[in-house]
Length: 602
Ligand SMILES: NC(=[NH2+])NCCC[C@H](N)C(=O)O
Image 1 (cartoon, helix red, strand yellow):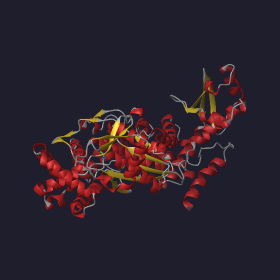
Image 2: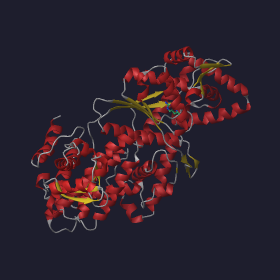
Image 3: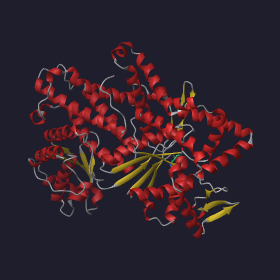
Image 4: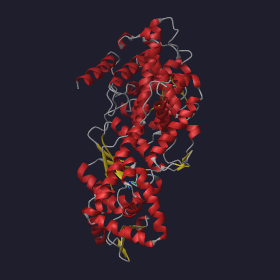
């Protein structure tokens, strides 16, 4: 990749003209230039306190609070003696250079200020270069590692509930995050496409099914049939018996029992692909419970029987995990048909054989905590040494997602409602509304952004109330606000054609950027690669959402003073424009990481 080489070396050459720095393992200054400033701080500290290593100090350099770039808490190094004396040593020895211009001692802390011209030059050049390849914020820490991630996983013929929506949103974010951290990622949607309910639908379809309706909207039609046949089953126990025997035929591979099912599945998947596309979500593979082979499900039962972990309950097989405080769980029904748990066990083994993953993540609501821990435990008991590579990323519940027509049961209803509530909102501002070329599309995109931001704004495990008005408002920390912030930045080039094209980075005079609010923006831009790393560690999208809001707020505070339009010094106007365009790129990158498509106009 020649382009990668050239632009990485551009940053490297800027760094090479500055005072030399030691290398620290795990850092990548050519991708995250704040690493260099932290190394510069560590180098100073070690010169004064030689019992420490650069790496040790580096790991203790934190972001500072309120107007401070970086801070070190001295007690964490357990130097013995008095903190004040150690601090004094650092201050005495300190010589400002092109990396660090100042250090201040305050109680247990040393506060460092980075050299402003270096900061602007390096950060903006880096953002500029790497954004062109959509690589700003990325790192290579995961290179050579393989992740399999399973998310969304709705059940065919049943409703798509908010749990599926959350899994989709969080799963898409995690997929992007692992990729941004250099992992090789395979995403799978594990459909609930097997089980007794398909026996029921088969029975119901004979009575209520319509090929025409099925072609029109398979998801909706199958759901309707399912609801009706369920009502029948509640009245008439025969229906259940018929359904069970039909499903038994399916499990036994009876082709005549499988034809319809195959078509239902296929049509539903086609429909889902389109809906996920609207959400900006893609899967590498649509797999499902139906595709899990029998072999491992049988072996699991045998193995657990050998280990004396199986109880027989009137012909049904239960695994007893009471020792591990995980209760008992059915592995096989009386009639020999498999169930959810067995399929998960078999499925995990097959996936390991296929992918040899370093990690596999299941994004599933906290209601299934017990189920996930049961099957992880069973795999461990079966002696698979990779069982500890499985991870459950869980999340809390959403309360009350209703639309104006009632409770949403399909994904497309959620999308439609988001779009139409947003559309109404936009129409309130008549003048602005008229200037939007494609209000339908734009309102859908902003509506979806609102749903996603509301979902990812807090810690995953928190429950929240679904609130259309709040999430789709342009005021406050909402999705529409972030889109608006991006559009405003994107409009700069349209509104200031006389400044274009901007000169190449090396010829833009960043010393003209003198306002503290401009510096705040640049520093935040520099911190984005850390946000991406932290997201990988915590699996929390909220850190990225918080970053996007902080950046948007910083931009909006600069907007009135750091002006572009109307600035008479053209070189200054260009430097400012460059800063804002870099901010646009980074805000865009953060939104994309969250699976959101940043808008250019609205
Ligand atoms: N491997 C798994 N069990 N993944 C979760 C599947 C979710 C399941 N289809 C449901 O809707 O509840």
